[in-house]
Image 1 (cartoon, rainbow, N blue to C red):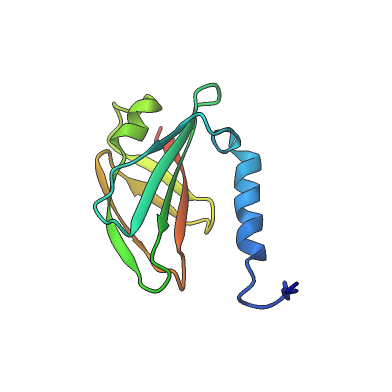
Image 2: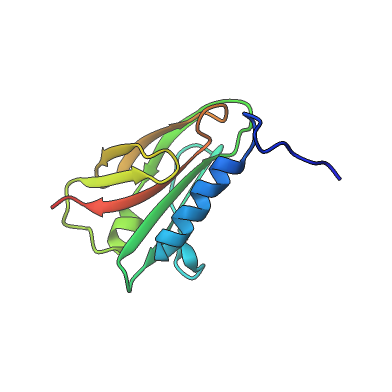
Length: 130
């Protein structure tokens, strides 16, 4: 049995804690029945969204599958926006639940770049601008 030092800079402890916090806070992440994969133009990236109709909660995940190199591409949000009833919006507030970073995205294709040495994934909460 290998014992991991949770205080090491390479420890996954903080990342796992952020994922668990997001799962506890977002109803869309508490079930598997709302999972839909999203089109993305790079085979080294995978994207999906989960939607909870009762709470109107929508979360998009994008993961770099390449453990060594940064990967970039365009993810198409139209399926996710349609499921959440956000078809009439021209911009979407996006908050990364792993880093706290906030972005403004648009319907259709949005650019992402994920570096496994820095941020290997996005876990994005989508919100309509009011």
